[in-house]
Amino acid sequence: MFRFANPEFLYLLFILPVIIVFYIYSVVARKKAIKKYGNPELLSELMPEVSEKRQNLKFWLLFCAIGMTIFVIAGPQFGSKLETVKRQGVEIMICLDVSNSMLAEDVTPNRLSKAKQMLSRLTDGFTNDKVGLIVFAGDAFTQLPITSDYVSAKMFLSSITPEMVSTQGTAIGSAINLAARSFTPNESSDKTIILITDGENHEDDAIGAAKSAAEKNIRVNIVGMGLPKGSPIPVGGGNNYMKDREGNVVISKLNEQMCQEIAAAGNGLYVRADNTNSALRALQKEIEKMNKSDLESKVYSEYDEQFQLLAWIVLILLVAEFLILDRKNRIFKKVKLFS
Image (cartoon, rainbow, N blue to C red; front, side, top):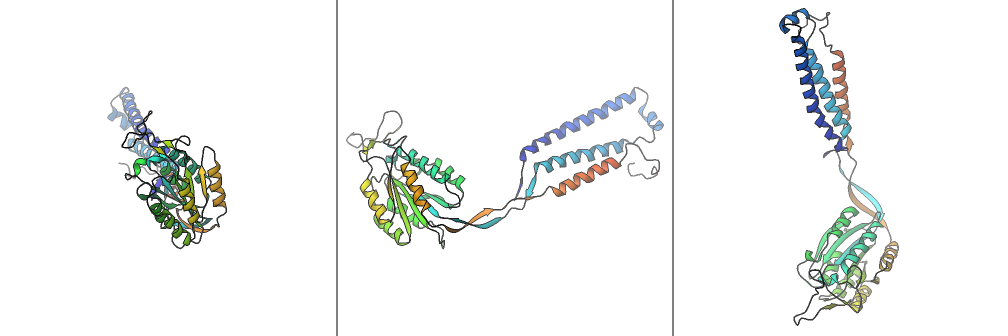
């Protein structure tokens, strides 16, 4: 793999055509000046030591040296490789509910946005841990496989919307089962699932899935989004809200009892998110209590600097340009290298 460490310096290459134009202009101007004194062919007989070919060669040597110098300062790099490194950390799979009910505004600005803000701040606190992301509604699928690349994790997190999963519902069990299968095999570090949901329209065996995860020493922590009293679900902006078949406004309520039962089955923590940071702090404390062990991660090693060869070429070109005289050397005038 090849790259430049400072590619912005490559814009200096645009000066090379300017240098050529300037040189051509100087040659033309010099020939016009010679014509003022007489016939150039006759004058050349009077200046036998003047060599136009030497002058051209010196220019092109200097021109190539300038071009090579630009590539040198741009920092050519080559030879990166994938390496396995070990860090002390834990593994965390995040399951985020993206059903339409997560758009309810009983927490500010709404349940889904609040969850994304909380997860972004939680990710900021990770150092050597691994994190993965699963989104679910009526179905569950992996948005980001487990990784130590927190930049990608936050990027994927910011792009999450309810439109990502076309099937509506709250398939908590499917999300937990998928998360339990998504951890790195044969890792001895503690593992946990953080499931963020309002628990509404629960439709599969989430408690059974949580028990199964706990049997594998995977804790299932639940963050309940919303309030038990509920809130309408905005649709299409403005003051429009989701309605049922009879035309009544649908009120989405946090199914707190179900969330607590799932957390208990998964030997995990249940906490309700509100307009404070209490849920975030509770999750951070829970993660801090986990046992950290060696985690293997695949990372790219640093690129190898490859400017040395170009620097030697620049030096050779400059030395050659310096040694070649504008005029023919009387000692070597019989050598016809430039004839």
